[in-house]
Length: 474
Image (cartoon, rainbow, N blue to C red):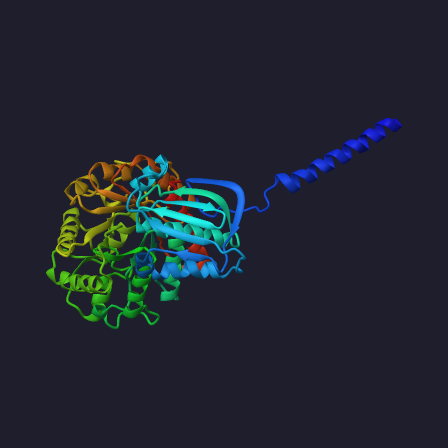
């Protein structure tokens, strides 16, 4: 290399170093930020504002009165950051009229009561919504975003709405699960923009009608009411779930009836007999207590996995000289419970696995498609009240489509897809529900069976992952 070549190489080296420095200093944003929740539309202009403990949150009085728990948590998050020299004002408006809004914003807020529009400029954040649900979702978005980014939020505009209307999580109390753990799960569900909790009522709930049958580490009725109040103030509806008719050996009601000395009759070891009116004396007493304590608008009556629907369980029945419950008695119990709840203006929910068969849906995973014996599956489905809400559960399926959900919807049932702990199944089922099922596809439920077996971090991560998928539709 000549002397001139050496000089030229050094000049080029310095030029590229200077160019790299210029890019770092001027072309890279001053702050990198994380978007912790899926958002349909986010536009930023490169500027940032900082939320601090002196930021002012201006809300309609109705929100503060009805949703005290969630508002308190939002304020608490903001209070963790140092005060700023120029405090940010966050004002939220529930719009009575959507006139004069940009066309796309008008359309979204008109179609979705839980949508929100956020404008972030200088030292102010303006939130516009058409309903209370949208207000809570917007505040949850801000709380999570600001918490993830240590008080920072980029200036710009957010327009967001859910792909599915119902977005819930099933919580199963168990050993070591106290009221505070359930409330923490509810808080994570709210921050994931869910809107319902399905609470499994088992022997960890100290109902008066089942006196002395609860475990030692129970949730008292006072704590249960506190959980329900906390959920309501977080914008989440509580839907009680009981194992009725089937799975009685898994902590079901009749297992406790036997211990209480209550007159009852079983059809087999796992299923109570719908022909025995004594069974309903206890069932109705328990349901009335739940209704009186929780005041639900919906109750889930279970009815999954009739003993004998799986080949491995038929041997259990044969060894005991018993047989599987026939479909007409399954139907009789559903109608009895449906009529009881209907008189109290309560909607009946149930599992859907006994209403679908592998012959009808051969491409779906066999587990969760259990209506394969005579009278079950499609023939039973045809006789069911059409105002039932069917929770169509599929937990570890690998296929992309879930045609059972579309069939329920096409036949007039409202349907909720239900998953568990397999992210790929949750993703595929959520996608299917949001694009192919139609208006009777209400949404998705994250069924956290074994909630009590998981660490808090595991269950909270599952809630967050599922909630984000349910919101985004994928």
